Length: 102
Image (cartoon, rainbow, N blue to C red):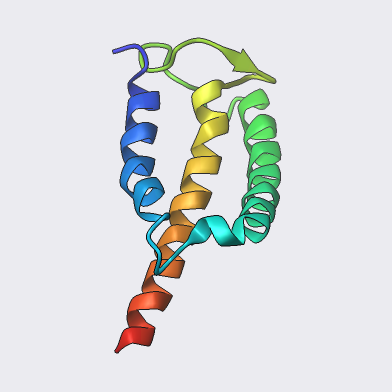
């Protein structure tokens, strides 16, 4: 199904994004650090992905993506690293919070 990759990304980020506004986590108060961490991670992996895709190490099935691409990567792949970085940071911060409460 066209757009399936985007749907999976949306489902992956939905609850972490919603819960990141919880007063106990309040990730929005740390948005500068959050943006920097996501940006550094994305830049590294976007570059890696662009090179690997250009070299033919992997590709993206047109059946599951919308079709819009830049530098050989579909928009969903650009968003993948933003979503995964955010969800990873959310998971880390949540774990720290709950371990502190013990």
